[in-house]
Image 1 (cartoon, rainbow, N blue to C red):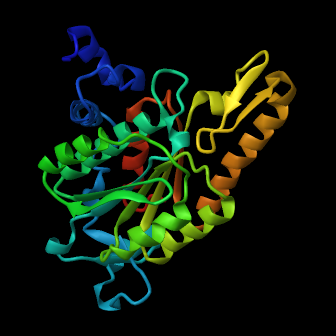
Image 2 (image 1 turned 180 degrees about the vertical axis):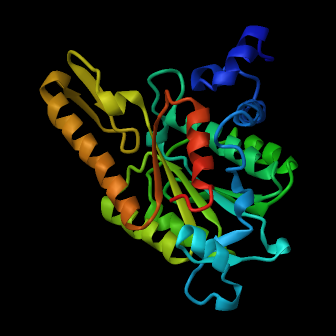
Length: 304
């Protein structure tokens, strides 16, 4: 199905529910990125994309002869000046495909939103001659493609994503060593997940990513229902990973639920901050341009 003229016009706002009506995942990704980049030409984010990776932050063991002292004087941080043939960014996207990601309240599930975001990021990076790899995971790695460059890669990735049906448990601690084992070059690792795993497992996994010298960005995707708990009257809640069902009175639980969700989110923020990881909380009503502009802002020189 091709979008109507009105839909195509409104797609500039990257509403996830509207994107779901468009033809296919590749078309959605192209719509988001090309519309976003057109808008950025008139925004303060011009030039803030990954192209600045002609420099990378110094890591212990790097040859100090390659430190750019001018960059140090400007940003008060040590940066290594890489040769032109080494400047292409390598990005690894890790997409959570567990059962809990299948929840939806507005017609777009967390998993579908994660697919839109993954495809849009891939399109954005590949159109700038960077390389992108993607791993889909739940209890284990469902499939993993190593980084490749070229825009034709986007169609391959989107076609594969459209074949996946979310299910199973989230187990980042199990998955991460397998993904890291195949990475030979430091780059950017993007995690897209609702992070429904044990705090201890998440802390260890994120710490391991950073220990390997990668820059890490976490997109924490939650549904508005999970953030606001708008339920009223007796409601049956189903655990989408365990298939357990519980009848509860939401009004009796709402205050404590919201307290725990607040602590969950704040806890993830603290964990990411402790490991110098960029954390972006998104709900599935968040327009995709906001998510991508935040990502682009992280790519600015000296941005943390």
